[in-house]
Length: 280
Image (cartoon, rainbow, N blue to C red; front, side, top):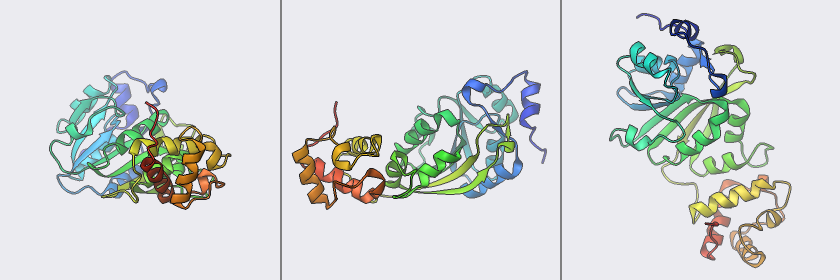
């Protein structure tokens, strides 16, 4: 089978350069591409949505593996390259942090998601994928090492935070492997990691009002040096908080990084039952 052209060759052939403002760093190392596919392990014919397909290097490897690939790419200069280089690929010109994954699923009950995420857009894209957790069985995503560590962190860690808790309620996250700057064109100034996210069939615990849970987690880590009692003043009044802490059996003198996902859910549930609600 003919080897797919390198990123540099494709860019030169079309008179293009990577858009620095868009955070374009194209994967060039074949072993990294092959390992991403191996970690995702798509079944033959499985619908896989690739977010940020770029020049098509991962798309090509996924097609070789037998996946039914839908490539999402917002750069209109790259869309024609994808369409001409990989005629069998379904290409959608759209923004990865806004695209409707259910429409792209094409009627499939479950889909897989993958992609090499732009560093400056990683969090918005991750939270967008999280919104489709009942549709997405798993996601294998490349991101900055520090973000990957936050995503996979547990309580007690200095990097445990909003990402850890929001995803921890609905998924198992693990860092699959690291990738150095030399694997990309152009080379970024940071180290990357590939993370596998396996979404659970149901949350680890009932959080009550989901919007309140999100507000609670954001407020708790927004002032992570403060105790929960002080950090959550914007969520509910002191009397309501005191009753919720007692019901959830949580010490209000703890800090956010000391609280496991299940405890955040219990506190949110207790507040929900007392009529607390996020601001409109």
